[in-house]
Image (cartoon, rainbow, N blue to C red; front, side, top):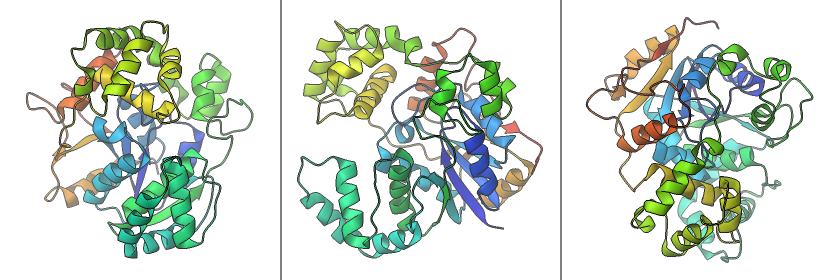
Length: 366
């Protein structure tokens, strides 16, 4: 049987994600962000709720991406996630994209010309953003042209590189429905942005989200729940440059801006420059909130849930992979667990995220 990997945030899980799982082939393993997102924000609902929704809609295994893989720019995020999935024996990676181009051919070219490609990237002028450099590189070496400005497609290109070096195939799936950041309520497939924005519209949520009751039964969070905690961290930290990826310039910009800012969005606006994009600033603020420092990634893979088929597959890979199914006295990953503890502070009704939690077992419904 083909084993297909999917890298996801499911923030929150919606009909578009259900469609992606339906289109993916064979046994489906999801590597999912934990309680903080790639663009530097807290998860709308906790990781256990999102894992359960995925398992009820076609996923066979859900594993958690460590914090220092999740809250990263596209290339590091993709490389860390594909590394975990390849240990679990995937044959291919399925992903949603706005642009259906020949990703497998691009992967072949990248695998054979990796050094030349890196040298070319390094030679491009600094005034170009990384996505612009990346687009120019792909067009130069593959002759394939594309717009390059859609977030899923940018991730798709990052997945292409990560899969190329590990000889994992690619299964691009055309995204349906509204655009990535569309707030529209029209159509059967609404964006995660629209669902977060219109979360109080029960009819809309029920139309857009499978198993909507799961989503509606748990606390729903945003940066607003953490602004005071973030402010405390910035004002009391003895040296912000000790935090992951924070340099002197950013530390002083953040410390000056926090005195005037009344929300995270306002703080992001004050710190952002041409050199420091909003997404990068949000990630840095997430590192500060969690007091993240550079550390090696965990060896073990954290299991959040499985179907019967998924459980069978686990038996076949368990000899070669350290599967962490329960966290007790021995930590799985200190940074991720600290991030979870801070995430829990965002709402009094949030359940314990690690200690005593065991993987969700869901009867296969597919």
